[in-house]
Every structure is written in structure tokens, then in C-alpha cells.
Image (tube, rainbow, N blue to C red; front, side, top):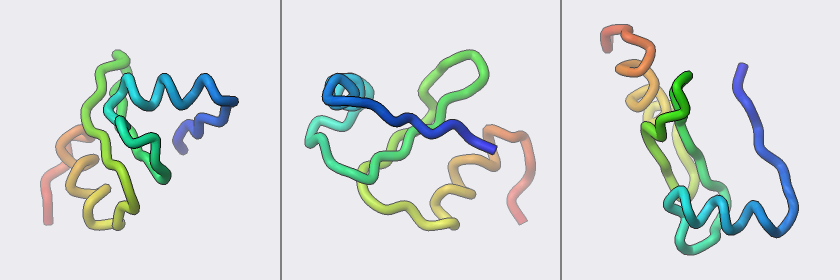
Length: 63
């Protein structure tokens, strides 16, 4: 499971602070359990791209 952030106009400021300077959607963030931003991606993301980001975080080898 994962957390989905929904909000009002103030979320635009948060997104910009986290790297989404254009304010566009979709905007994907990967944040670890300690709250560290590990990756951000503006625009669509494929399953392969997300897997490339998540496998090292989860400590699983690529196959």
C-alpha cells in the first residue's frame, strides 16, 4: 500500500518545495520511512521506472 496526498491549493506550494517547480501533474514522490525524499518524477511514470526506484529502497536485487 502507499499514501496518496490530496489537498487544497496549499499543496501546490508543498509540491514546488519538493521539486515540482512547474506545478504539473502527475507528480510522484518516493519518501522513505524516515521521511527522506528518495526520488521525484514530474509526469507519467511507468511500472519499469517505478521498479527501478523502489528495488534499491526495498533492498531487493534487480532480476
